[in-house]
Image (tube, rainbow, N blue to C red; front, side, top):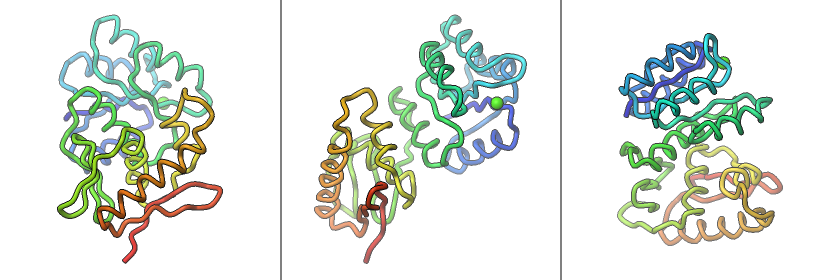
Length: 224
Ligand code: CA
């Protein structure tokens, strides 16, 4: 799995590449839009993380050009918080997903995994926390020799919880990432799905528990 990182903030680009490499991806970077476009057109990469604000050629122009040239490389756009319009334009231009800066490492990896999974090119890197592993291909939660199948929303919630490595995932974050575009009953649904996940963790006799941080959200914790 080869990932192209197009980002002009060199320190950030290098940090993203280092994170990806640690997870078993091959990563290369370009520091301006034109170089990024040339590398993307080379066909050597499986997916691309593309910043919008770039020198020489901005990210949206790079993306539009790729799609006009019928290059369908999966693209995860990086946007600043103030660039909401650009985010919409980006999705219109054919981006597969976007991530708002600043972002957590786990979130970046979850997005890259989700993007590559949709395209059937996901590497065999299953996220783990404590004694549990999330099987990305089978959609199962595994503990020791037992496993349970997760529903689609349960799966996405568990993926977010594991990728935040014990830190809190806010209710807003669940609502935005899993219930976006759906009705406003997300908040009640979140609690229901958390209770489903707790039951499944118990069924697996896992030491991992989902803790409630009242009024904020949920996090994973290993208990003995
Ligand atoms: Ca930039």
